[in-house]
Length: 283
Length: 89
Image 1 (cartoon, each protein chain N blue to C red):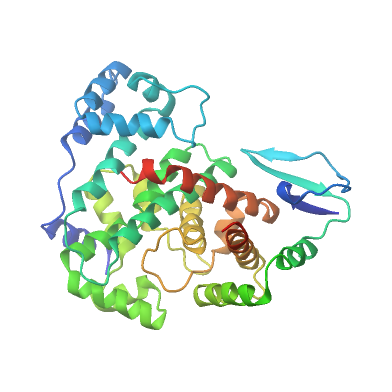
Image 2 (image 1 turned 180 degrees about the vertical axis):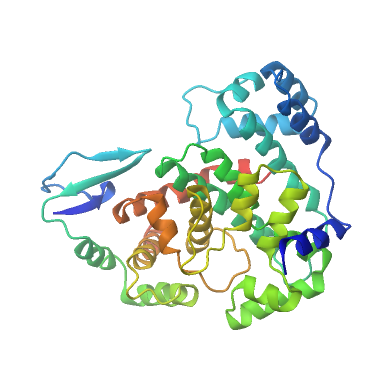
């Protein structure tokens, strides 16, 4: 199925929530050359829950500031406009799907843990590999499997059949999804990201995180999300529904430029940050 | 010489080069260090039965790792972390 057909399917789904108003307002403001820190801060302040989450995030172990960051304006200076926008979205997106039925076999709690684990792992890898945008990679990791949630919400029984097949046979989820639906969660996630007007880089991290053997990742952030997804599962940080771990794509590993001997500390750091931030990240 | 995780440094080891640190992920190049040997030492800290349970659990989710240096290393690290969890629990 080609990208146009997937876009048509996604746009016809009726349970896709509209983006929170605060996100749309931020998007419009940030497109303007006159966007100021004070104006961004004013918009975020309209939603005290989101404002509190932004402050919790900037004060988390990810940044390790010795003194508490107490003002939204200071948080915006530290995180930057793009990260703030992504964070506002990420804190809202799973709330939007929270009450929706996803079918008996799809474990939403474990799925959410897997999303957090992948986000943390992708970010740690991005930092270790000296990428310029670790927070954007975090968002890519957090949302990499959003397509699964969207399909499960719309077709709970059919998606339960995917999960059951994967659990009984060890078939990779993308293969089972293609067999049962004719498309996979990466295609749906990527089309959804386009519909929600995410940055193109984020949409590509979501769409390309399953790198088949021999595939060459287009960028390091895609390689980081690909590997973050696998490390999260290997470390038992939730589950995206897979029975078997995929093999890390050799080109992705090569592109990240990390040494084998650094991997243990990378993985130690993932486990430590996940443990320290679970409460903050369970938005 | 071998590149070691800084947590594995032990008294009496001699650094062959300065410790490199990238974003809190340090490497140490140690004279005569052997990661396989360290792995064997880790295994001695818990009973073979516990190791067998951990290996069974990991073999259920890992693809075959033979011949894949990266996946073998991920397997070794996850196994080590699980052993640590058992020791600390």
